[in-house]
Length: 282
Image (cartoon, rainbow, N blue to C red; front, side, top):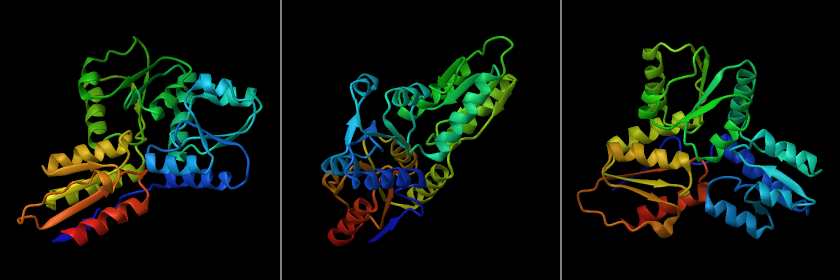
């Protein structure tokens, strides 16, 4: 039986940069906090906790901190949180993914010009919450094509459309087509990062050939969830796991190929563990 890893899987540039930043700071002996989990992978966060890194859950918790260094997570935070860290005199170490930072700059500039910002993404996701927090004017978050069909912009307002970096690439373009058919005055910036596009395309191509797909990533990881959805469209036997402990495979004899992919916040060691287990045991 063949075990094949997707061409693009695991840590992306932004996540690796953020995680490396925390590891480096943890070695300095300073009191280190991250605002929210640095990435959506429980294994990574637990390892950093063992190194003494503490996670700030929300603004209220941040307000109680009197000293130390605060690292901004890869997903980014709102401008309000940045100001609060500065006002409290805490050291702020910005590990925001550069692709996310680009969106902050776009929405801040466009909303200052009076545009109505439309963010295509998951409303409760930290990245989207951070993007919304850089808008100085009106902003709407749309998650699904159905939301776009129902959306009616304020009269006379130009729209600026951006996307969560990990949003489904095909779905984003479908939503943009809906706006084009409605004839709205808009500017669209495709802010889905290259790593997301590559992972989704590679996962779909592999799932279309595989008898079984295994998707590895944190349960709160938006990009991993989308990889799972994409793989399920192509391969009925698709499993979503966080670690090897979650994998309970029972493969029929007819299975000839198992495909594996992983979210952008999944460490290589986890991917290798799953690959080796499947190769040895099946």
